[in-house]
Length: 325
Ligand SMILES: C=C(O[C@@H]1C=C(C(=O)O)C=C[C@H]1O)C(=O)O
Image 1 (cartoon, protein in one colour):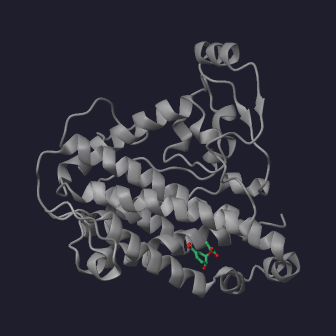
Image 2 (tube, rainbow, N blue to C red):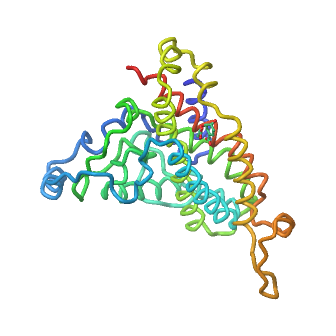
């Protein structure tokens, strides 16, 4: 997808009022917590509390590996989180007010535009403040939606093993992730209407946005593992900036077909009550297929096919294009 298209997606996101009133700047994510300008008081707090630097591959990031099978296993685990989160959000109606700036009074204004914030933007910003303080966005597999506003750490920083090319730090396509979410995903998984469950809906949105972001940016690890496996095949294409050639090489259609099939099956299984009224549990394929699911499995499969996998590949492409810089 071109830069113009990306900006278009971000602009149309602003139009629907989801989170578009604040744009994230990819370059801003590079420096993460270290470079954020802190007030003298904050800096003092940060210095006082973050004197030590922890080393190692911390628990909770076991997925920071470059073995392609392990990387693919990590993607499979992320599927579970995404599908569950879709099912959770789909129990509520669309609740458009959550996404309209000013429709629900929340504290604060967007600092850049002076606009009022939507409720979902407010909660996402506040969530990132909390998670940012406890190091979430220092992990190379996490990407903030508002990287320019990250707070100082209150815990000692962790030094992560550097598995990726340094260029990876500057890749953050969360503008597109939120455009995908608000424009494509939400209207497909929720019925129109207002049931007043604004807080619950927004919390589901945030869980889902974060899970999608992680899955999509995991393309950095996929790309590096593919590159390491055959650098000689990638190098000429990278030098020639041959985007179509690189995309062709990193695409594995058989794996994509398997992902879509598995996602459809998982949506089927996760979305049903496995006990009937008699308390009988059946995991027989035909019973699973006939059972009514809380979310249409075909819709989830299509979202994966049309949006989630293409964005993951876009991250892979952006990463590989600068792999030799
Ligand atoms: C992630 C991979 O790269 C590509 C993207 C895929 C995805 O997002 O699931 C699947 C297959 C590949 O075309 C992979 O090869 O596993």
